[in-house]
Image: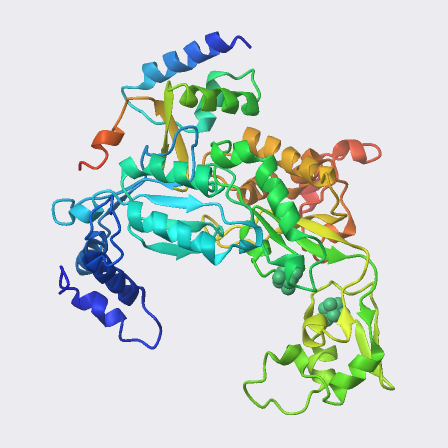
Length: 80
Length: 437
Ligand code: SF4
Ligand code: SF4
């Protein structure tokens, strides 16, 4: 897998959907890269979070992932 | 003088048990007086505001917490749960009220010195309110603000040798019973295995890896003190293969009243003289024990290691010597289909470093669940959806009699066409003509 190309593809897919949705399940990322093993995609997604491209959102029981800076932001999370 | 009037909460203090309301009130007062001169980093009246917001929720009959958030510490996708209140102008002390999960040490052994350090840190940078321990065993620190998270994380990891636990779609903090440290029933070293799994799967513990949460729990024997069989996606329960060791003289000691049954645990009331027939033999779930002519005999091939007889007469009966563990999969508290107990996957595996026989099973199960599990589907639900047979296939485990709870009870062992000589040659429509559904 070309890592840079895969990252680009993930960002493009998320941007495309960003009008309707800002947070995604890990499984949605598997669908972006159907030829890769879930474990590989998981590691890539977690790396992208560490690099500041994506960010986690956690309810405590489930985790969702989105493009950093889209949707409601940490600074504004405490606003209604 | 309390900041908020809380008549509904006050009522909770009237019962016979200690109340969290009294505890929080007490801590609110401690914070207000601050005789220890703590350099509080979040509002001093956070505890007053917890009581205030709770009272309001009681009054309105709905929560005023907003659950979840982006907040966390760098590099981790778990261990912090964002929480905010939806009435911050009324209760500014709890405008942010994030939870931190702290990975408890295996067996929950820590020194008072450690607890003091932790509480000092939490008094300064959080509300001071803790939950010892959460259902995953973690030490739960309840209520701090976003700016404190990295500070607390730094202090924990650099000065206290302490990590955060799991949350979200991560591996949750593995949790174990006290095991061989204190308990003679332990069939394996639960703490060693718990510590090993915690280290081995750090990535899964700290970063989301799965469709949903995944829990490991480890019990040293079938007494299941951490209730692994009822609430872990994968439970590791100690067991033995050979015979229960019997000390006939000690059995006589129990019968003669020399030793108290259950090590004296039921001595608060007079239950009359010990009756081995009624209290042990008659309660053996498999009916595999006899007491005749002053001698106890056990048909060990029928014994399911339920622990009952050993619990009642611990001086006379001991676990066998050929020890290991059984692996169960798929337990969960009620979500979709009601509560579900774990199903036996591996009847016996010796517990030896580097635990390869165990990690092989874990990773095969994860591969399957990561691939096939739906969003927010626990392993137990996937097993139900795709069948236990599929679980056996992905883990490469051959069906054995122990997988069957009782005849005709477990409909998950089916024949496949290539396993049947001649395959499926019958015509279903022809068959249905003569046999209604
Ligand atoms: S589960 Fe068994 S080994 Fe572990 S503490 Fe309880 S009785 Fe002892
Ligand atoms: S452990 Fe349970 S099943 Fe086995 S002999 Fe004792 S009471 Fe019976």
